[in-house]
Amino acid sequence: PSALATGQAPMGASFRLGGLVVPGTVKRDPASLKVEFALTDCAKEVTVRFKGILPDLFREGQGIIAMGKMAGDGVVEASEVLAKHDENYMPPEVAEGMKDADACRAAQKAMAKAVGSRS
Image 1 (tube, rainbow, N blue to C red):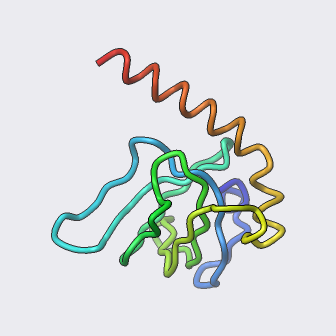
Image 2 (cartoon, rainbow, N blue to C red):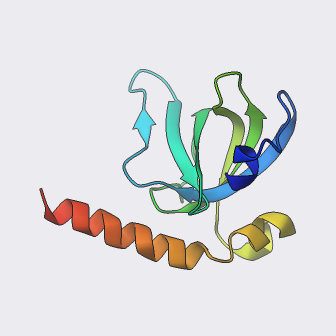
C-alpha cells in the first residue's frame, strides 16, 4: 500500500500487493461473489475489489497477497487473492514488506478490541 501511495504502480500494469486485511472493511455483495476490503501495511491503506472465491484463510487482520491492476478510481482490481500461510509461500519482496506484520496485527487487534468494548 505505501508503494501505491507513492505512485509506483502504473495504470493498467499487473502487480502483487501484500498487507493485512483491515478489520471492519470487508464488504460482500450477497447476490454475487464480489467483495471489497481495505489492505494495509500499517502505514497506508488501499481498497481492493475482487470477484471470486476467497481462500479459506482469508479474514480480517489476516495477511494476504492480491494480484491485480490499479483501476481508474484508485482501487485495486484483484484477479487473485492468496491468504498468507507462511513466508515460504510468498515472493521475497512481499515477505520482506510483511516483517512488521505481527506488530501491525497486534495493534489492529487491540484497536478492534477497544472498539468492540465500547458497543
